[in-house]
Image (cartoon, rainbow, N blue to C red; front, side, top):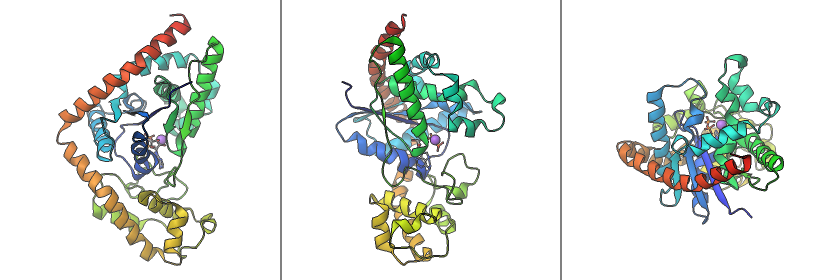
Length: 332
Ligand code: ADP
Ligand code: NA
């Protein structure tokens, strides 16, 4: 009985990678045209769970919004806004802090990765991150969340929180949200290490392609990307233990909008010396215009701010009654 609705978010923590683009934004754009209500957020409250600079946060939030719009999100079709502009996220987040269990949170692999060895010094907000993320999703009664593979565990936790809330209060109020993890780029890997996810937080800039990289940077990073000396095989099965090769093929497929097997059929028998320049050309052709448009939009930050304010107003119109009903259920 829940109307289909799509929500997703990205942290404005600086720099958008090819992983964010292929694993998230490109798919956000595809979903906005499906005739479903779509809400896409800059999750700034999540970005302050680790040490941060206010000036950078302000810049990165607008730059991420510019990235969304440059990649094709249309403010007339999708609600674009900052998480902090819709206070109902944080308000429902508190309710969920009282629903989620410590043991659930301790099992989160992202918490373990981000807190590292010194958990005692991590912020309480970093620990509670997945509970606020559940609120980000459920404050809109979201049914579908397009994300990369790394977020799967957090969506499972979101469902656990929804189920426990519904059970504890004897209601059928929050939906069981489905993650939408599909396509050839659900987990884009580092260009330097096929066992690590491409991430904006990787210390090596050579490990990732940034949305604002120049054509020369993109070509250089792909030329230097780690590979092996073997030619490309005919079948995907033969890439099982060649993670770096597999990653480049997946990137090509996702950029082109095809699938890995189709790409292999096209390049079978070729060496990386011939494949890489073609991958570079494709990446530059797809990313170049987006990077240029981001730069142009960043010359007009007042326009970006207006778009976000309008998106927040429309998002609040959905969130307000859901929070009010939640409070009523809880007895407030
Ligand atoms: P990051 O991991 O770069 O810090 P976020 O945690 O804000 O970025 O993630 C934003 C979105 O981008 C999420 O849906 C996440 O799953 C997706 N994403 C991030 N990195 C990758 C990647 N390497 N491959 C595929 N999707 C990714
Ligand atoms: Na992530």
